[in-house]
Length: 255
Image (cartoon, rainbow, N blue to C red):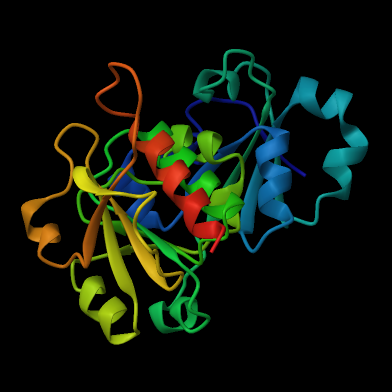
């Protein structure tokens, strides 16, 4: 096991840099914090390249760390990993993972419904959506240009590990042509859309969720087969994007 004594170590500096989206994209790596999330990644298709544990964590979890099958495990002086943590109570265990790659034809060939995120900005919303996507059997999550990165720390935590199991593809607007050619109906969620309770939904569908503040982009609307709305009572005018997406995905899962 390699040892790190200083926060100026190049490995630690690299960890720090991965809080930036452009660095994650360039390095094709992301940052995992905490044992629960690491276990989710290890039990999925995620390739873990490095694990970092503090002295105290290792002393308290020696058998767990020693059983890890990851090639590069680093023992780090107390206080260093904690300075990188996003958690209120840092555990003292971090890891680096490589995002899996997926091909569009492969994820569409089963005909399962898919989720398309249009400029979703809030990392927690994005993570919650992919968690719901797994729960309700969506075959893939497509993120259009302008969406937050689902490998952002907040998105990862909100997804509760679902990001490791649901195919996730960053893609351009051209996906709509591909979806239509594959026989998909394309629904967009919109406050002025047709009441979801009165529409005969198609199981082979793509559900598009627009930006939290501005809704569906005008360029995206031209690709839609139909817009859907969720009936609400009282004075509520709208729902949180992730909440609304979950409701519609649940309805689709019942088909």
